[in-house]
Image 1: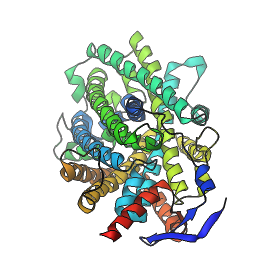
Image 2 (image 1 turned 180 degrees about the vertical axis):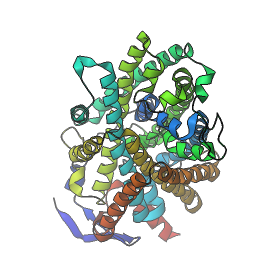
Image 3 (image 1 turned 180 degrees about the horizontal axis):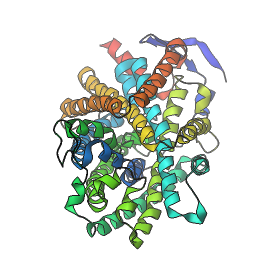
Image 4 (image 1 turned 45 degrees about the vertical axis):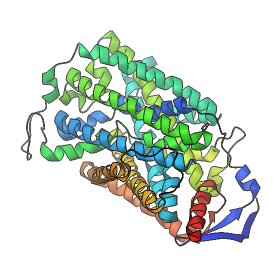
Length: 480
């Protein structure tokens, strides 16, 4: 691999870049044209659907039903605004970097890498949390005497990373089928849960002496804020749809259509699951359940069906978020922000080490067995990236009003400004839930930025797609 150090392309934001040889990029190619808007919508739902089956319910222990319900309304509005903003950005800048690409154009190399790092933290930790939920579902099925444990986590990581290594087209089709099954499971659950629903179950947590406490808000007003990270679990990772841009057909049109279709489905599933699970199983019991939808249905035959399908839902999100972290790591590595070896693709155009390395880290994190703790850490990374992406949308609207935008966000910067404010509140909320977990994520984030400051900002690859987007903008600015 020849590096053309003499071709120092540009210097921006205190970073230096150079052009790599054609062979460098040839070894880092994804397979284009493998996904239309329907498959992308399936990807968006797949990222999130496990959040309907488990994880959100821990928010009942923070805010009770009322606190979690109010938090869910605010967060649902934030995600709708976020998605509309990202639909515009993805139509204008379709590349595998997703949020990193958007922020790189708006905020320069430092802002781009900060956004990519936050997304990478989210997507590396979220599968670890989901692996612990998969373990809980497997144990409750009592299949062949299998119990929750490290080898369950190892098995799911090994199997699904292996499928991804076979290529994006095959992986996305498998993911779409599993997601469809998971959605059918939610329909079955909803129909069954209606017969178990009791209004009194929604408020069966005794009020504390917190300010504003009541049967509806047993933990008072602060409980609403503390429930926010768990309300995010209903939608976490949908922002990963633009990461498939380089593998999509006609990405300028299909990525926006896919992500908007996905959020439409998820808004319905959020309302359905929150009300029916809590009303059927009770806020108190559901607040500490590893498989709430199953336990809400008791010992019925439908509970067993939902248990099996719930496992499919968890697997769908686990499977698809592996896809997301590999593409984010691939883009950052290809552009030189992280070691270039991590972006080399195999014969089937799958980034080998970008799939395996975060998988090893996630497996080690899953050994803690602390799904709720890992969830909060993933939310910290997600909410931090949302702040930076919404700032990017606002800046690009102001600074580059004439940028080609095949899709434009309804409401413009007002829409993304709302998402920005709520995302800032969500970042702070992660410290309310577990200050140690949030600080650990902040520490990891700081280490990534230190690596960039000391080394990688001097070794960026100018002819990578994401850097070329930024260079083109800078050149146009110079001509004005």
